[in-house]
Image (cartoon, rainbow, N blue to C red; front, side, top):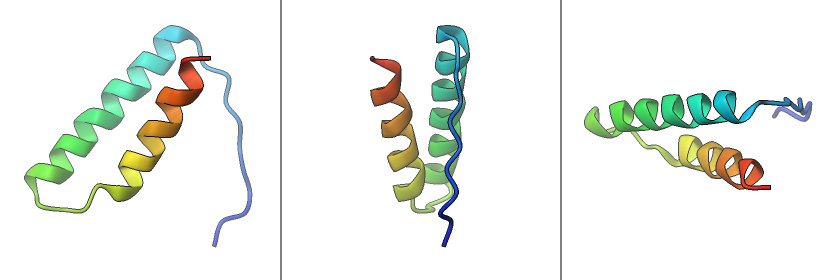
Length: 52
């Protein structure tokens, strides 16, 4: 559906802030019983890229 990719350069602080925010969003979805597959995939991509 979406083929356009965008790359962001983030500082360590910004990356940690993004990871924490995505995790909080994931927790809200879990508490509402909503699937977290897409959020999980994005969160893993962010974590893997930040470890480099």
